[in-house]
Length: 342
Image 1: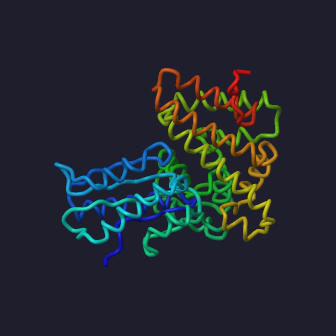
Image 2: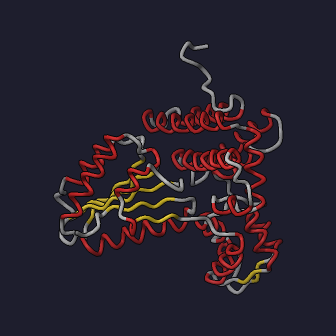
Image 3: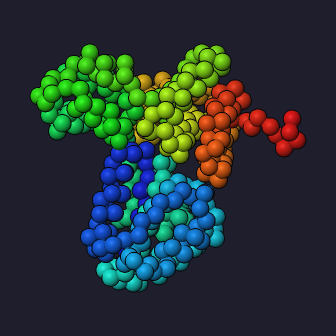
């Protein structure tokens, strides 16, 4: 029997994971021609609705391609059984004329074991962040493809300033093409001019500001200023902003778990995505800001805010984001009002 057309892509390396999803999307187009494409977040979409889309043929396309993010949230027995039943039936069908593909995606390393077991072993990939010794050569090769060379100190500075995933590195390094002619040798001064003095704010720089060793009032003021910058930029999507912060707080939860289990050695930190000294310092600071319980409260807050904005639209979007930051900083994720309104 052929493998079921279901894949599981997990891990913190956003860039390579995104590239792989696109490769499979293109492969589906080549096999089926026209495809219907969907993207959902588990926890926000009923699994029954996703399975219904997978099972029902389209009038205009030969296949359905569904990307289901945040797969770690799929834990209900009934939901897992629905996916298992669909996968078993899909494996019996020919996947050359009509079919559906389901890609489960998660920033976490793993998902519920019963869900994972539905996916054929050859269809599971964990996308680890690069090890420390790999990063310099990766950046050097990226710059070379863009037509640049770089001083060793410049490469180190890039890695200090940019989040440790290839998507962020590609995005930031692409800015050099806007500033310099081909064959330019990039120096530390160039990096600071392009990536620091004109730095583009993002969910990651916002999280870094939330972790600064300042008073709550100062951190909130800094965070609100970054939020305002982001909201006035081209990348003003609240969905992307909350997704980025959620990624950071999930990593913080993992940091707490590693320390609770005594897995604080260099190797344990590396394989769990905390390779760089700058990142380790940031999450040490974050752990002092929010303990494990508070981190869970922050994740719940981010989820509630995301669902509220999706439900209510853009009319009160800025207010909800500002209230979210206030709650993260001042109340450590605890709701401003409890069920009694106190």
